[in-house]
Image (cartoon, rainbow, N blue to C red; front, side, top):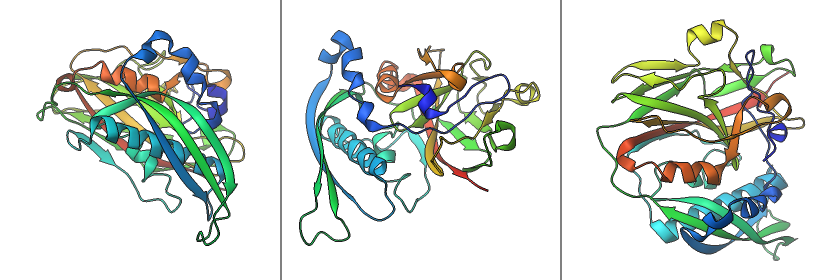
Length: 306
């Protein structure tokens, strides 16, 4: 994924949070995974989504994709809803809850680590379909890898942002709201902090400017910390041109030992931010035993204001 499209920037002076990802680019995943695509269990899922209300075509395509990913995980691995803190707000457009949040839950029994679009098309809705004139039809082939082991109930992490609603006032980053994540763990751990936006994951820490935070049992740390913010390292909100609101997920993975997360460099303003696909991020998670990690995530709404 091209980080310029997402508008996420990580510099010594500022970092952006928001992004817009076109789901039509998802097929690029299939060609980059190589022989690893033979791993896991493959399942083909079919979804229909209607274009109604204030939903845009991109909203509909995204919901269809994440509905398919969630369904693929349920079919292959079932559902596990324990061991992970997850907080989300209800959003009128369904962008926080529903398919998106379900598909990216970090406490799932399995993970979608790769997918390719088999078919996608728009067609007229059947007569009598309430409020819908157009239907999006998607068939996607998904690779699911099951989680192994058992989570340690005594190893948990909590994340609390300074706000769950960040405002974008203009193109100048310094005028926009900033994000500070307060994180607490029950065991000594190393933290990886990311923002999940559609099918992309942006690595906020560790980075070239923010070291991998280490936390003592029961202690709370801020990312970025006060000294880093004083030095000009801040996570500031931004939105791509033409986008007035975005829902994103702030996620924290605490591990008992440092586990490097490979990520490519972004382009343009995001050249200093590590970026990888959601499938690659899930692949990394699957490689960490359940009893060696704890995860938490919280939704954040980024809105443009006058």
